[in-house]
Image (cartoon, rainbow, N blue to C red; front, side):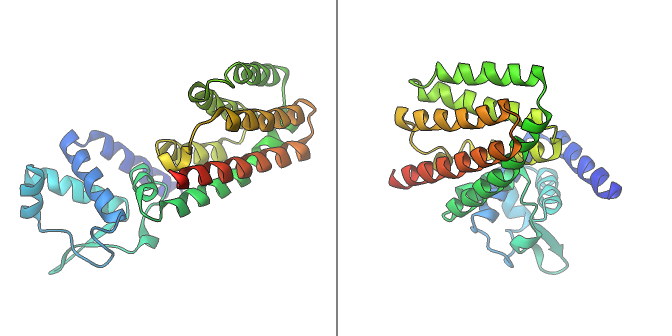
Amino acid sequence: MQDRVVGGLEASARMRRRPRLAVAVVEELVNAIVTEVYPAGTALPPENMLCDHFGVSRTVVREATTALTEKGLVVSLQGRGTIVREQNNWNLLDPMILAALFRREDGISYLDNLSEIRSSLEASMAAKAAARATPEGLAELTAQIDKLEGLVEMPAAYVHEDVNFHDVIMRMSGDRLSKAIIDGIQSRALNTHGYAGRLSVEHVRDTQAAHRRVYDAILARDAEAAAKAMREHIESSWTKRRASGLQD
């Protein structure tokens, strides 16, 4: 387990150290692989062709190929080149891969899955927040729900503070691992039009009412009610946003 953690940290550090050109090449190739421009089992273009296509050196292409390998997307095979691997080998929590998955034609199915994950984890965290609530945590949550109340007629501004409302609850729960999972996955989805849906004051009013139910349960330190309210809020909100996004 420790070896895996250290390996992950080393891979992250290597990506940060890679030249900008290499990162740009990686992003384009990740998108091409995930969206099946290069399906599983096929080979990426030869190194010289990639150099010409991107206008970069062989060193940059090799750096990019190493990054793709670290993400589980490709494997180098003697005599066959760089081969795209099956999806079950991909690191689906990798930010670049996630962003590309949400852009696929079947991206809505991954957003459905994200909603299921959020519903489960955030319901559990809401229960923990209620059980572990401190005066300081409740004061912060109260300030946030009041701030949201003042933004109901301004959907675009409300969305930003909506994320912060959930963040306060997740921090109150003390469940740092679940919070990290949600933060990592949702950060990429928030930039996806299909996840946001159409903003409307009516939707925001419904959302605020749901937030109030979560808030009231946490304030009452009712863990079961907090979990139920959070689960219903996330599931109902996604159902509405999903329908709105599909109509666009």
